[in-house]
Image (cartoon, rainbow, N blue to C red):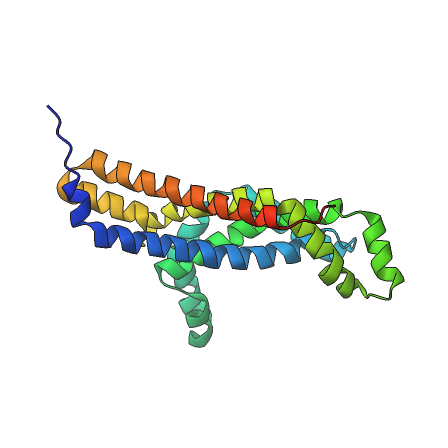
Length: 230
């Protein structure tokens, strides 16, 4: 008869806690960087200027149609070989990171493409009357974007941002492929060391479930606190 031994999980609790911290750190940093890049790409795609719109569109279409794991492997294993052979050492050191840093870069670049589309939809949803009102009081294009477009857009895209943040958190599990000791790496180590596969993966799966639910709850609470509407 198969007996479950949950004491195994307690013996590896430090590894699991470290995995949670690393996964959350990668999520927060990647989401912040990806949001900034995504917003810039969204403005480029809605600028009406072909010299901005064309490269932004190419970036989005390219990144959204290749696997995240491929980006991670190319950046972590491929870039150092190219950088240290062809770049000055100072430049190579600036673009080559360890496993966690490489994962953050890959997540940021990858999710910037998705966040671009989220923000682009939000920008296009802002009513023309708000833009005209801003210009009528003397705001520049930058002022209109800062004080009108972004605040109104942010409210309308919060549900989509919630889904993206949850997906990004779950995709931190791919970091296991480059030996970053996040949650999935912890589960694999526990199951390999102890052969308690069910206990290891069920525990980590439950942690993913709880944290993803908490991310959604925080974002929904933020959505309720913002009262304006488009």
